[in-house]
Length: 77
Image (cartoon, rainbow, N blue to C red):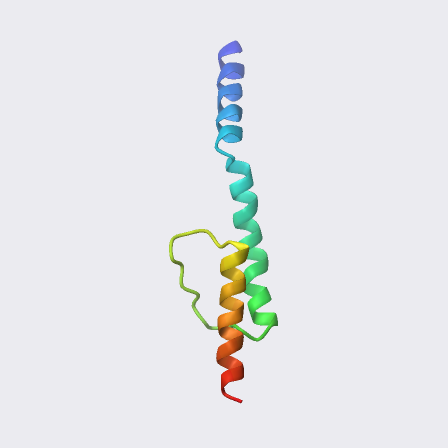
């Protein structure tokens, strides 16, 4: 029983050290909020495939993408 407890403690320490739970929370947020926000702003169509550059989506990247797409839309006027 003590071996299981030690293993669980080791796993918990690893998750905390590498901030795995934070990463999972961030990824869930990205999936739930970023794409719908682009659709709401009219900057992404329902059938559009968003490209993944292999890096995490930061607030700065999101802002840059929104600004780029807004500029593209307004440049037609």
